[in-house]
Length: 164
Image (tube, rainbow, N blue to C red; front, side, top):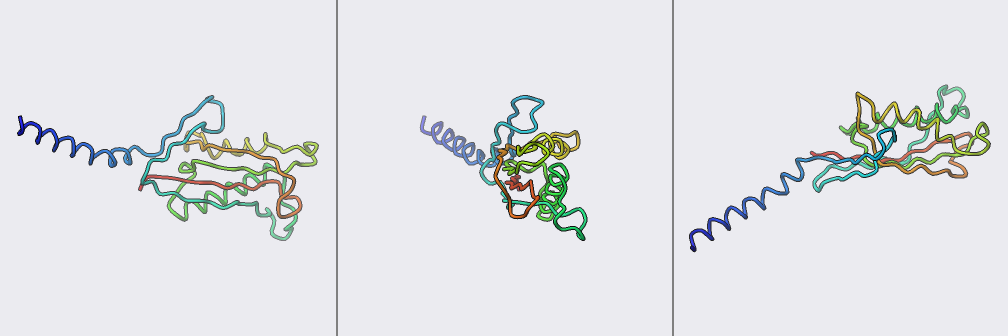
């Protein structure tokens, strides 16, 4: 009886020691609500993941000779997400690793002072939930009164996570 207990204890200990490795091997898990939604409803990042925080990213002017002309919400979202993609890639991450985003939008004259979330989402869907990059992050989108420069309508921050 004692021999069996010792063997069972050794097997149990070996199984418990293997659990953290198995959990970290599973990777980031996302839960999607509506299949047409551009975002995930949940993201689970297991212990041991590499995490990267991307500070609020703002648009660059399409023409450096016209620094005040940043374009509309669509053009600004393209600029912001393109810059964010490059920043992530410089650290070995990709847009597919983004698990959480916060989008700050300023109301535009064209939308009567309301945020142009339709234009932002149109661009967002070209970076997330595509055949090439199927992952979608969780996200909050907030209308704010203003950003750091006149005619700036978009700022986005992100958290990315991946298993080493």
